[in-house]
Amino acid sequence: MNSRVREFLVKAWKNDNEISVHQTRLKTPYSEALLVSRYCIHAKGFEVNTARIADALYYGCVPVVLADHYDLPYADILNWNSFSVVVSTVDIPILKKILQEISHDDYLKLYSNVMQVQQHFQWHHLPIDFDAFHMVMYELWLRRSHVRIPFGPPLD
Image (cartoon, rainbow, N blue to C red; front, side):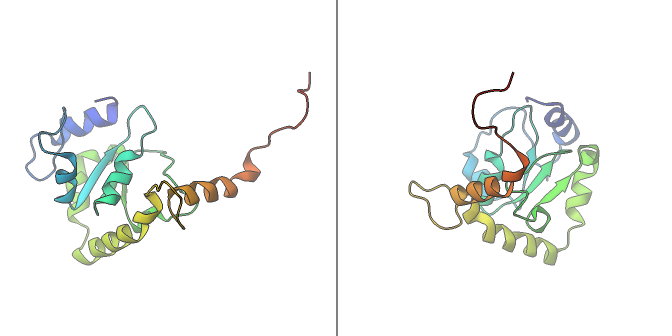
């Protein structure tokens, strides 16, 4: 519980039998919880932490990102709306309604796209084409003109 967003989420949904949120660690193994979930909620904390998003994708779970103004990984490369659901924090009280309004066909499209982007979030000891290493390098290359580093001695 390291953010107001997570506190708001738990307060709104802690007693619901369809949306599973926890104030403490899960009693079941993390991987089992992800494997049986259609959607996996990622509530922004105080730190930049995308491990849960990558975990959700690895286990074939459609990420539900609860955040405003959140810089998602590979945002310059991937169309996040094609494989995730991004929800504003003010909409946390209607989260269930938002998810229920996603048709079965639309869910299947999201899920299919999750399966396609999984490879981009996997890290290998020796990089392979289109894995996390290559995605980070490509993202840095795309942003190369945004940051200028002066060469030579510092100017006074």
